[in-house]
Every structure is written in C-alpha cells, then in structure tokens.
Image (cartoon, rainbow, N blue to C red; front, side):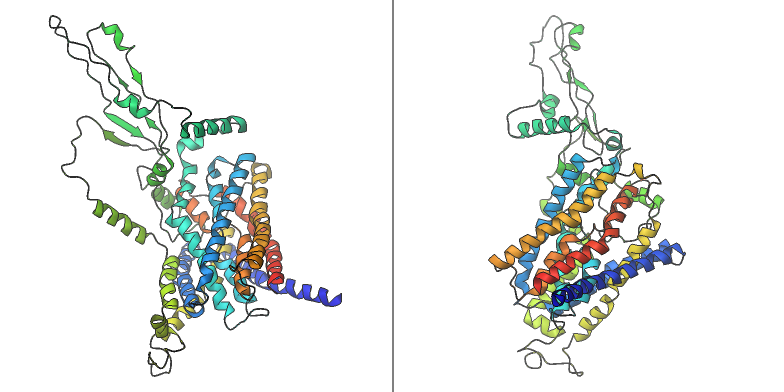
Length: 532
C-alpha cells in the first residue's frame, strides 16, 4: 500500500515540477512589468524575436533531431487528434454561447477561444522537463516530444491564420453587431430553423437579385400620345456595410401609358440581404500572422489604424459600386495572375513556425538532406563526407538552431506574465459573464481532457495509431487536450478592436491560466500514469 502511495506521489511531483517552473516564469514577467522594468516597447521586441526567430529554430532543430522515416507515421494520428480537439472546442463554445450570457464584444470571439489553444510554449515546457525522466527515454523522447508538439502547432496555425479563423475576432466590433440585441433563445432558434428550411428548398424566399432586375411587361406605345415604352429606373449606387447587408433602398419604377398616379403602385422595394459567410471572411482585413504576445504591444491609435486599414471592414465607411453607366472591362481578368496573387498573399501571411515545420519535414525525412545536418546511419562518413571537425558539413546550422531555440519557452512565458500585468477587468464582479467564463473553463480544461483520456486509450488498445511502446506520443496527445486558450487571440482582438482593448477576453483567460497549475498538473499526472 505504501509502495503504491509512494509511486502516486512521485507521479504527482513529476507532473507538478514543470508546471511550477512555468508559474515562476510567468510570475517573473508579471513582477518585472509591474515594476516598470519591462515596458511595452521592450516586450514587443522580445515577443517578435520569440515568435519569428527562437520558436521556429526550436521547432526546426527538434524535428531534424527527432523525426525519422520510422516515426513520421505519428504525424497522421496526431493531426487527427488535433482536429478532433478543435471541433470539440468549437462545439462546446457554441453551446456556451447559446445557453449563457456572453457580452456583445465576445460573441464571435468565444468561438475562436474554443478552437485555438496554447499548444506552443506551455506543453513544450512540460515535455522538455518530464521526458528527461523515466518512463521516457531522455536520449530521444525530449526532441521527439517537441517535434510532436510542432504538429499540433502546425494544425493550430493553419486553422487560426491559414484558414482565416482569426477574422472572427473582428466581427464583434462592427457598429451593427454592437448595436443589435440578442433575440431570446426560442426566437433565435426558430429563425435558424427557417433558414435551414430555405436551404433545403422547402421555402423559396424572394431573391433580391430577382427584384433588382425585374422589369415590368412592356406596354405598346400609343402613337397619338407620344409616350415612351416602359423603362427601368435603376439605382446608381449600392452601399454595403461590414456585415454584408446590402441596402438597396431605391425602387424600380415603371413609366407606361397609364396615369402618373400608377407609379407608386408599380414600385418594387428591395429588402436588405445578408452576405454569405465566405463574403464576410473576404471583406475582413488580415492582420500580421506573427502577432506579438504582449497585450499592449500595439497602442490604441495603432489598433484603430490597423482595424480601419480596409474600407470594406470599417463599420463607419462604405464602398460604392455603380450600375448602368459603368463600362465593362475590355478584357476578361487574368485567372492565372489572380491565383498567383492569392498564392503570394498566402505565402506572405504564413507564420514562421509553420515555415519551420515545412522545411523541417524534408530535412528530417530525406536521408541526403538530413545527413548534411546530423548523423545518419549509412550516410555519415561514407556517402556524405564529414567536415574537418568530424561533424556533418552543415551541423553548425542545427547547433545554431537548437542554441537559439532554447530561449523560446522561457521568454514566451515571461511575456505571458507581462500580458497579464497589463490587463484590466471590470471592478465589479457582477459585470463579468461568470457563467460563460466558468463553462468555458470547465469545457476546455476538464470535459475535453476527460474525453481525450478515454479516446486515446481506446486508440492505444484497439488500433495501431498509438502503439504502447510509443509512450511520448500518447503522453503528448493527452497533455495537449487540456491547455488554456492561445495568448495570440488576445493581441488579435486588441488589434481589431478600435478601442485597442480586450477586457472581456482577459476575464476568460485569467481563470483558465489561474487554474492551469492545478488542472494541467492533474492531466499530466494521469497521462504519465497511463504511459507508465
């Protein structure tokens, strides 16, 4: 009995040690910021160095050192698990949004919080500490664990930046969205059910396009009266706001052989029509994919400037499109040039950690490339000659990458503490959405981890996705199910908010990161018990 209690104590201590190490780094950043030793300008520079240099170096060095053609098969199961976690988080966030009160400036942001998690620095710190002790192999599992985490980072960056999911943070700060009142639960779902019926074809609403081009049946002109044939009075300007509601308040008027009083009866009014989800995503401006972790790195003035950089997004501005007299283009658009521009835009907006994964995969899997950087059996010293120091020719690149990457985790944690030091929350507790905050924390850090424990164990026993001998793979898959929301959402929200603040998001993050030290320790202990 005492032996089992001692083993449980050892497991809990091993799980708590890396969490305590992270807590001390966060506290250090908090204290130095409160003391004025880490101003926003300095924190911004550190965050950019961390995101753009040290973290990509850490990912690249870990992947080249750890990945081989034998263990790269783990990428498929880990991507599958990461996508499942994102879908579950989105579902939980949607349920919380429907059953609990959420402020107007966070009704879309809560969905983003459900999807994206801190899959970067926090689990990396845990893995780098725990993988050095039994039952793991410290010679290989440390780098292999970081490489597995890089797969989760790739999935998150693809979802958040590549697919444009970060644009949902901007939809909370449009004038029409901020002014609208949320309908009661029953009315809201009744309207959604009617929308589904229209999609299924059971109801056919009047289309705005039909009203826009509808013409009256022509009447024969009278030669004696000299009246003209009926014509359509076309609106000259269409105004679109950010939410995509097209307000075409003009009317199509018939001018016929009847009396002038018949004009009002022949007038057709076009109702506003909402733009599709895809159109709204395209209308929202992008932000730099490498948003800094510092919460006040961007001043309020800079935030307003960035948020209003695209006229299609600005809630107070409109763009115009004329009809009738607008000349048609002489030549059709060059599709190849258009797709080339889109491709270049996508490449420019790809964050450096994603590029590290893109370059790290071939350098770790293609033997001739890997032999340039590190020892490869059958290549090093034979088909690939060594440098004068006895190492592979480009081994210094791998050493430099590992050397620079060592500062990524502690500096990111210090910057996270600096972000918390600059956050402000409402002074009165009753002004906070306590129900939504609690439900999001429970779903993100308790319900999804419980689900992952059972699902990963089932995959481990009944499939070959998580072999029992691959302990670090199982450990990483379970550990990353219970991390708090990503800190980058904080900066994205502040950039899109014209006021440059994110007070509601801050209240959600504070509870998650405060409970992280208890819940993450428990989850790491459970994962360690499973693999042991």
